[in-house]
Length: 110
Image (tube, rainbow, N blue to C red; front, side, top):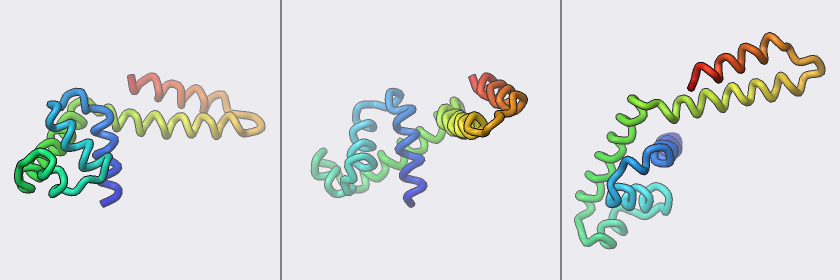
């Protein structure tokens, strides 16, 4: 569950500007502010089911955006490469070949 929440939070960070204000509000309250479905429903004077449906539909939209644009995947790949490069630089004699390959991989992501 925590892994899913973390993923949705990242996807929301990357794609929130593509959502409607209502979708942004529901997602922000549910995932960032940890409101329950009932609390959000009370806030907007709608049913819990309406809030649940909206959140699930929005999660699916975020996954579709990620499937097409891959911003989160590229972010993760960049993070791995940057960590690898930092580790190489900390070595007594960093391998120029390994650093060159890591830089090439970073360039491919863009």
